[in-house]
Length: 104
Image 1 (tube, helix red, strand yellow):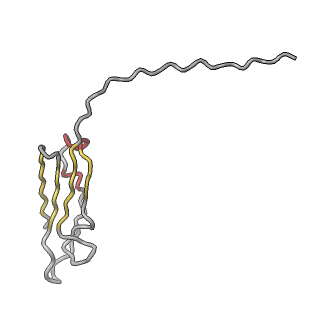
Image 2 (tube, one colour):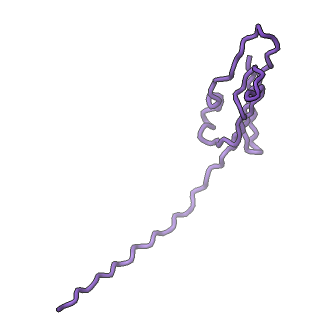
């Protein structure tokens, strides 16, 4: 019923998941809503390297509601591995000044 497409573009640094379905034309056809987790479609080696940039406005279904859509697109950005930078030296704390007691 639902058509799932995965587009992986390493040059642009994007990972796109598109889910679509045909609209319901007859009352006899069942109403269906896409309720699967999209993260299950992401390969394990990319799971922690992706950041969600955009998602569909409403649920994906074959129903003609204003809040439902027939095509949904999740766009993920592939995060580049951060190269380790040299650690800056931590300055030692300044010695505390002690108050001198006054003699009476």
